[in-house]
Image (cartoon, rainbow, N blue to C red; front, top):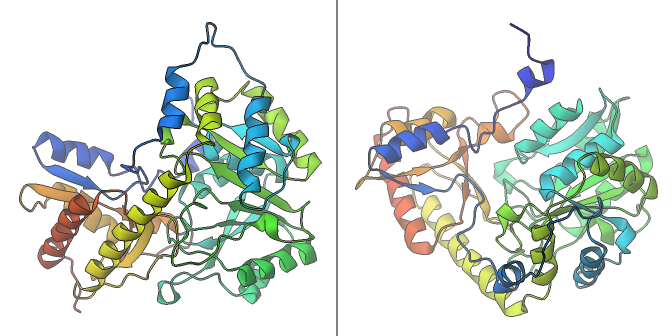
Length: 400
């Protein structure tokens, strides 16, 4: 029998989706599952998006330009202007979701064996994208004790080696919800200039910054235009995860030209997704105010309820719609599987993402989980009630 590739063998399974078979088995037994494991909001997609797709007069569903339609890229420029990011349509490459934007960035900027430094815990699929591109992810640890603030610049300096080619961040963060300050980002800007590195920044949650703290983009930082690659997606902005529309954005013309070659190989991004996304730029501000208020309400319920449980600690996220919590358990992977296989309360249970999959360092996150507060407050409260009961019954609980 022919052998699989080394990449296939080393490609990590998604910690967010790997428990799906256990969830499906529980559902077949009639157990209701509250999904806090994945960033799939229950927020309604705006009518601006849906109506544009429903009312299209297209007779032939053609390929679009490999970089995305010109009309959408022009309209995107007006969107970014709202955040004081000045772009030309030529600075934007439309992608099949934010995932493809990350893949194109890695393929365009890194050689096999190069290294990229990422503060951990980080979005689990960064590991997968690195594996696919033959790029080694070098973690720099942030900690739950200080809410997962950016590690010190000296820690980044210590991680830089002869094969280091870039640094990657997510702001606001997935899985931590941490919102980086301008001072933290300026430290990174100085670092990438000093060592001539790329700075990749995943900023798909910019709409969701809380407590009056501002969103600061890497594109707001002066003097690093040729270092910066902004990675974006409409999935969470408009609760349109299935549209699969993202963007790779840079002022570095060489990077854009290289990424376009990869884009040409896959032909084009989705036509209907671009039509909906272009129209959605006209979504009224009231939509985002309501959505943001809803997420803040959910966040506050989640964090206060978790921190009231014996032995549980959850820092307050500054953005996005995720929180990391430390639980009084022996093994997060075992606990999350146990929730689906062996536990129910009122014929209900919950699905969480074990934090181990968000770390590159072996053994890290063993007693942490990520929770996505993407359910309405009533369902969220019921899920947390299940969690409280589960922590009382779990055979691997640790002493508080």
